[in-house]
Image (cartoon, rainbow, N blue to C red; front, top):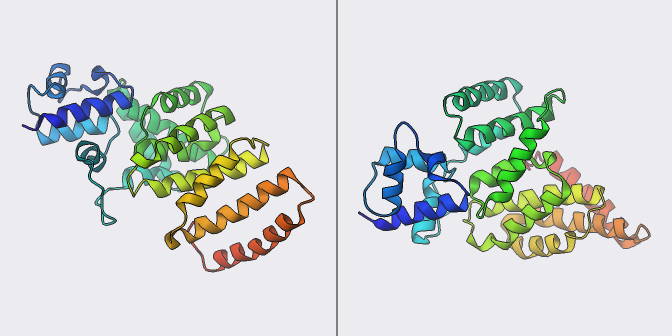
Length: 275
């Protein structure tokens, strides 16, 4: 038995600020998980995968954490479990909401179901403003994200789809946490971080939350050097000009740049660029 698996599982569980009792279920007991973490017993594959799901960690992320192995671009990582919450089909979202609500009723101690419900309602609100995420659930989301010591793919998708629910101070704390730990992220997660930052910057500019923007622009410029991030690179230049114009409305150079880049975005739209 590879006792490193148990130690890694415990480390990830601690990263997520979760107790063993929150992972235990009908399939695997508190004692089994505790012994597995201490390297005293093994765990079947089915129970192991179920336990990983309970702490919102994919098998690929676990493998990386255990063996510090970079995934190739042909990774088998399954985005579906996150992307299904980004769909814009109202009927499908309501179906997902019912599924997660039923699961939460059956397993009230599992955080994932509660978080998934908040995420689905957040997406439904963008389609139908009559559907609201109440203050109690927003606080639950905020406390969960702030308690995480290490964001994995699940938290990044959760955060990205619930941006509009969080206040500026919380946004700033979370993005600082993500950026400071960026070197630990896998190749398939990093583009998601860029997408989050590009979505946040216009919100910060519109609301005059300008203090964090120089750091965000520095991050973007250092992580979009590859031609693979051409769209991100163009968007960064555009947003930086918007920021400079916000600081100084008389900045004619920034104003001219914004006008020219508007034409670039029109071209993107005409090509139906998916972004």
